[in-house]
Length: 188
Image (tube, rainbow, N blue to C red; front, side):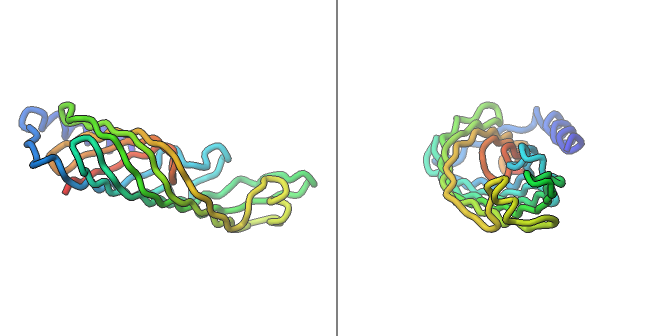
């Protein structure tokens, strides 16, 4: 991750003098963002990522400072061996998926930077697979279910930097497959 950030910064410095963002007609466009979670949603449970949190979102800029979009994220985490109240142990794997619709307020262009924030409404689903132990004891001890879903309403804050008029990087904080995400942004 550090290497990719260094390469991106070097690319930015090389092109800093030659890049000048061209105005777009009516500022309407689509951003497609593909990201990797830096801080997984289940970080507090000390889960180990078997599949890093991956996300894909699309934002349709409908007005100068407003966008509407969709989001999907997925992660797979495995817990350490946990001790239950009765002295037995348990370990499980959680396959987590979050999908939603999002709306955001967008800043004006700030020398290639775009700041944004908004709300997301969607659905999250966890599928728990036991590796060791008894699911009923885990339900009693941790209050989790083997297969559950719920409505998800959350806020998010992000920043996008454009290397060229069509390619950039983004970073975002908010609930989904990860609490913090960074990745590549493509503008169409």
